[in-house]
Amino acid sequence: MEIYKEKYETAKGNEATAELSYLSWERGPAIIGLFPEEGVTKAFFIPVGGSDWIKASGGQYGDIGENGGLMTKEEFENRFGVIGETLPELP
Image 1 (cartoon, rainbow, N blue to C red):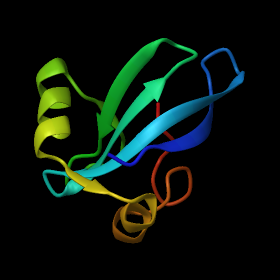
Image 2: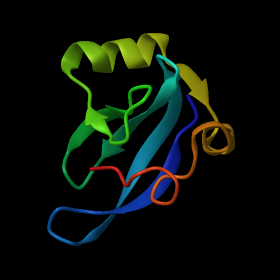
Image 3: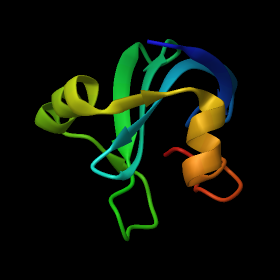
Image 4: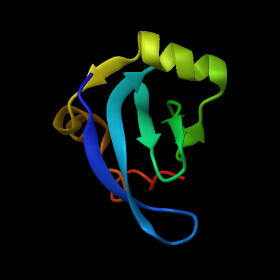
């Protein structure tokens, strides 16, 4: 799995670095990320026809990891858009 280090802003307004993997899941964009500042791994997806990221439940997280199509960051951005520009920022 390709992992990309990306900067993000924490809930406290601090800058941190997450390790993200980009996927396609159920024909929409999905992200699995390790957020070390928070000490957690999370998955987010945008359902087809949706406009906002949804935090994956435990079952969805497993399905994204198992059945999601892994993509490079470039493939993801070409297909779905750029996070924070044409796609919303991660929550």
